[in-house]
Length: 217
Image (cartoon, rainbow, N blue to C red; front, side, top):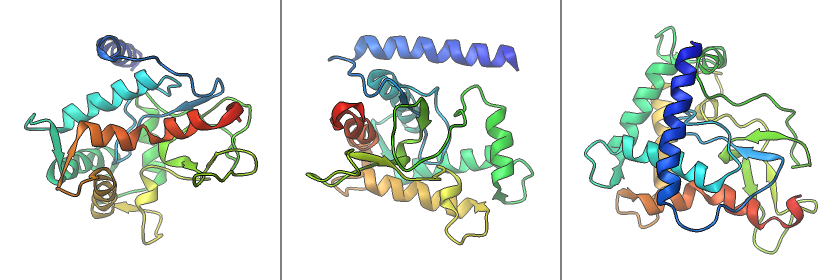
């Protein structure tokens, strides 16, 4: 297991190095205490928590191009559904057709990249923490949340949030439906395809919201 984690980390570091060389602009800091965890629409953790926009973007693009099965430069609904199915098969450890939080925790503990536990609060304060992108909620333009332009939505999990019937289990269809909801959010021009630009615009929005927040909270 240790060897697997080392190899996975080395592979990601190498990929990031290539991606960062090809990215222009500056890597703007967000918050010295805050890091975002890159996750796929089906809730697969894609890399280590990051406070770097360029590193975060590189990990997301690696997922995008891997999911783009026919390498035509866009994602389709079928490709996103295939990704959801792959994730479901990994999460459903006992193969009973549903994912529980216990299964999900057991799976994540076996992976090289996993979020670290942290105290959950609705406000972002000056304390080290990692958060999921979906947990970042930007205030409407011109408004603030108790002195901050962003806040955390408490208790969100990128997989268990697909449990729409509140039975504490996520079925394959629920995970697929959640992935499609995110696809529809990315598909800005509603043409049934998601370009890399559309994908990054949506996925980088949490970083932009955090960057706009004055005074690092």
